[in-house]
Amino acid sequence: MNAIPVVLCPIDFSDSSRGALRYGNAIAAHFGARLVLLVVNDPLLLEASVIAAGSSNLVDETVREMERFVKQTLGTRTKAEAEFVVAAGKPAPEILRVSRERGAGLIVMASHGLSGFRKLFFGSTTERVLRETTVPTLVTSGADTGPSDFEDVRKAVRRVLVPVDLTAATAHQVAVARQICQKLSVPLLVAHVIEPVRALSAHPALPTVETERRYRAEAELERLTSDAAEGTTPETLIAYGEPAEEIAKVAGDRDAGLVVMGLHSSPLLGPRMGSVTYRVLCLAHRLVLALPPQLDRARQGDAVDTAVSTGSM
Image (cartoon, rainbow, N blue to C red):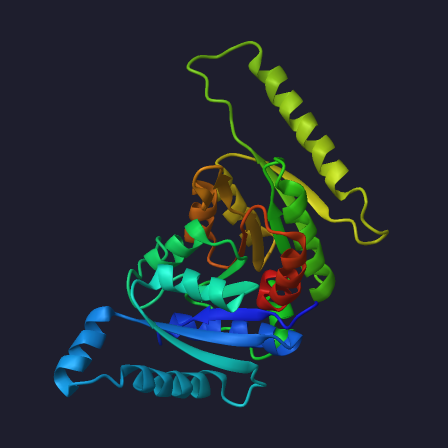
């Protein structure tokens, strides 16, 4: 890496963000990155502090609370060089702003926080960040307590699953997943889900269409993985059904601790999280590394190096 990368880890003092903090710290410490910890206060809290005291020392109080939180969470673990940032406003826009201003190469955050914790739906803040981020984002499961060190990251990942839709973005996603696997010494599984053709009535051409779709998928997967070094060829798999449900099922059946997925983009609106990524986050309950489109090559390399230790590598 040409410069020391930055890992941004938003926290809200919840148990879920403790797990994210442990991942962020393990990654930053292993790669010599700076760890930026961010807390976003509600503007009403700032206003109440000013009304009650005539002035506000909320920032100082928040930093002290962050220091206590880090000490309690990390204990005797090796700690990365850390910077404490306190902002006020809506969480997602502030996370994105700080990410831009600090030049973050990776965002690490929990799928659930203090608000919006539901069994099947992840937090609105995480969703909003994924819809607008231009930085790779590692989302940790709310139940994941996080690693003690980098070796624990490898144990947590075990296998990397990269679901591909065989569009132009596929090669980038596979390349990132491969680098992660190489650095963690874990196997890679490249999967493609063929959705069933929904016809109003039976059609004699359907069997032929399905056979052709599978043939094309097999050929493309072989092309994607054929340049691997001997002994490191990724495993490939083709499944049938609803993509998110099949991806979650494959991750569980094949014991993949990390899923590497792309975020969709629009020429007018920029990167947006697709419905499949959303559903996988709701169903899979494991590490998900979400890759935004059109990441420039230099920054991509830093992000991969940094991400590797997150369990997203």
